[in-house]
Length: 427
Image (cartoon, rainbow, N blue to C red; front, side, top):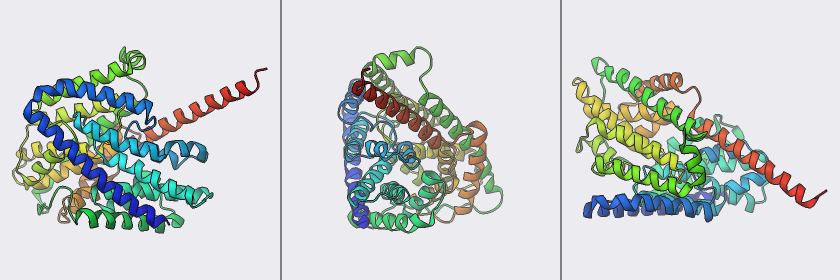
């Protein structure tokens, strides 16, 4: 029966991809007609997303990966049932697409993880499973399959399950995880074709002076990604200064402020910072587009603002765009290395700096560009970025966010339990 869930994950991932592309196309046409209209659309859009999420899809906020990781460590499945619901999964899809229309710097890969986990959790409940290990295994498999189907990277989905979601690979759940990923991947390929996310590149890095790019990209990506992760962890605990009480008292007003800032950054970048950054990253990878350093700096800032807004949306695709922009800028200073190869190293370095998952960063970049010639250089860059990032941010981003989410969820559940007792026993 779980194979049916895997097929459903693949189908929904394809629908999500088409809806996301349609949302991005709509925003592109809006900006082409009148770029200044985003000064109105982005604030009003983020207000609408914030209101809809709070009223109709409460629990859909954020990426989806920390929530999925948290459920893998929960043994109170009444709480898990609240987090991995089909209602929240629907909210993730709709609100992420609306965010893409409004110019938010988000991707659909993180939400796809929670969507996949929710689908497999629903199948687990329908099958009447009660064993904790089995139920957690279904969530793990669903989350990994969602990510794999979103990027069309089955191998990266397996590594994501090991390195990011579970930090281990239990023998009992390994076969199920692989089966679910394969079936969801086959479904996505059958519907979309056997495509690669950023096309194909044949760039290579011969051993020698060209490997200077490994050092430069590894250190730069590790520092930039580690700083981003540290800032996100800090912001997840509360906004600085007077912004915290303002956001708590006027959440819609704060959402409008975030939308306005995103629109201003978008205007400053000629619209390059809006959305996932997919077109920009693909253009940088194939050499058809060239951006100044301001692109990845402004994209970096727009991601932080989007995170602060709390709207649904992931960070994987925008992080790859920032890494591509950074690599595209660095390559001009490294004439002895293939420009395309430096871009790939920049993507792996920054992505690993943020997520601190070197194997996943390597395999994702390798698969999204269908390039195995730079595997060793990608590995070396990712592990260097990992070490540098750890010095800046000692705690892995998604694990830290998951721990914070678990703490808030369990505290809220405890408060509800106490209130329920008081209502039933007034004395």
